[in-house]
Length: 393
Image (tube, rainbow, N blue to C red; front, side):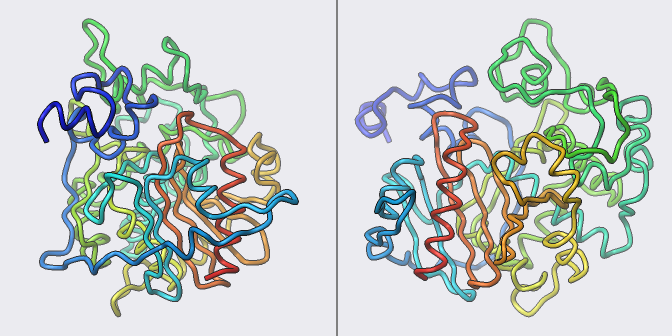
C-alpha cells in the first residue's frame, strides 16, 4: 500500500505511528494489528500446511437484539460501542460466526495485551504435566537472577495466581512511574537517553511489598514476565520455540503468532503475544475440551480443572477487582466468573477477550481497539454480550 492509499484508508500517515502514540486513538486501530512494524518480535510458528476455512458470515448474529439494563440493544451495537476489530464465535467446536472490522481478515494478527498471560500459563501447564515445573518451588529455583528481588521467596504458585507481595502499582498514565519504566524496558515506549535496562533487569530490582506472598489478589504484569522466565528456566528452551512446538502446532494453529521481545531477546509473555482471533479461539476450545485438540492431549486434565475451578475466593474478595467481578476468582492467570455456567476468560487492556462458557459449549475470541486501556463499564458490557450470544447460538 503506497503512502496516499494508506492515508486514505486509515486517516493518517504511516510515519505518524510510533512508540509514543501507538496505544492512543486513532493510531491504535492500525497499530494493534501491526505491532511487529515498530517493536522487535520473535516468531511462534503455526502448524505447517494448514489453511483457514472461509470466513463464516455474522450478519444474522449482528442483528440479534438482547435486553441490557431494560433496553433493547443489538450485537452490532455492542461491537461498535466497544471498538471491536474482530470476533469469532465457536459452538461445540465449530466456528459459527466471524466478525471482521474493515481492514481485518482471516490472516490479520492482533496484540493480546494481558490475554497473553493466560496463553503463557497454558505453556506452564504443559511443563507441569511433564514434571518439569513445580508450582510450589521458589522462583529463583528456575530464575536465579531474581534471588535478591521481591520474587526471592515467592512460589511459582504465587506468580500464577497474582498473589505476589510486590511494591509495584500498574498505573498506565504516569509517564515517570515504575510502570512506564517497565514499559520502556520492554521496548513498548520510547527509551530515554542512556537507557539500556532489560525486562529481567527491571524485575530483578523490584522490592517486596508490606505483606506476605500468598495474600490478596494483586494484579501486576511483571509477574507474568517472571512466569515466562520460569518457563524458559524449567525447560531450557526459548518461550516462542516451546510455545510453537507444544501448544500452537499440536493445536492446529493456522497462522504464525509472534511475541514482542526486549533488547536482550526476552519475550514479553505478560502482554506481547500477537495472533489471529481464530487461533486464539482454538486455545479456548482446547481448554473447553479438557486440554485436548485434534485427538491429542496438549495440557493435562488436572491442570485445566484446577484453572477453571481452583483459586481463592477470599484472595479475590479482598482485592480491588471484586467491584467489577463480584463472584470472581483467579487461577493460573485465568479469570472465573463464579456464575452457574462455569465461564472463565482471558482479558487484555483495550478490550481483548477469550471467553469460554462450558455449559453453552461456546468459545468467543474478541479483539478491540478501545481508546482507553481499562473501562469497567466496557468489561461489564462485553460480559453481557457474551452471555447473550450464549443464549442465541
